[in-house]
Image 1 (cartoon, rainbow, N blue to C red):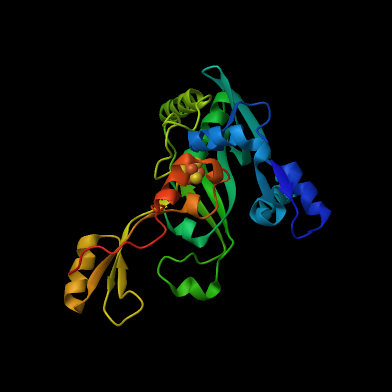
Image 2: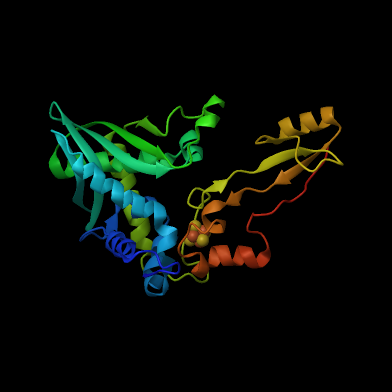
Length: 300
Ligand code: SF4
């Protein structure tokens, strides 16, 4: 992948961007890769030499690299920072880099730093749970150390003090979130299932339905919504995630219900590096069904 510099930012950032372009060491797969969609991984392998990203779009990944340096400087007793672990499983090597392992009484507590949005913190992120549990499994398999807890330390890039009066809004821009720990057998079964899925897609072409489609979860589809509207008013009175609730309010307000199709944010929001080569997404664009628009439906 080529990193460009359209806005002539200092060369230091270019060097950092090139250095930090993701490495999984001598592994076949990284933890983030096996959690992610086989379609994305396969298309990245096929089009890596054609892919481009401008350094100006890499702000948060550069900040992530900077944070790792800061974390290493803050090294404390019994803290292991930035360790990459490798495990052989079903003939392939899986690796994962763990931000922080804190050894307490012979057991390990794992913490992963994430620059993220307030929205992500306030909504469920099942991939955080999966990723941290695979790290726990890697620690157990490669070092024989039992992990007793996993957590995220979220650094909220869009936190605003004025919004703290809102219900559920995080009270500070750094939040520690404890995550559930899976039994090791469950994690191992998951790892093997995902590796098998990726291995089976390894040589498939993105044509004639060969390559498995991305799921709604892979595509970060934000669910369907129903907006209650009224003639003569530009904005919706209220937006619901449950159609029946919208219909009920529309009756009271003498309005109507407008259906808003869920949107695959990863595809439409330029968060997928291979969207230009992906037949699943390109076919949706060509058929006008990529889910970014409104589709009025029904009334009350
Ligand atoms: S564009 Fe969307 S559907 Fe295609 S690979 Fe990326 S996330 Fe999956």
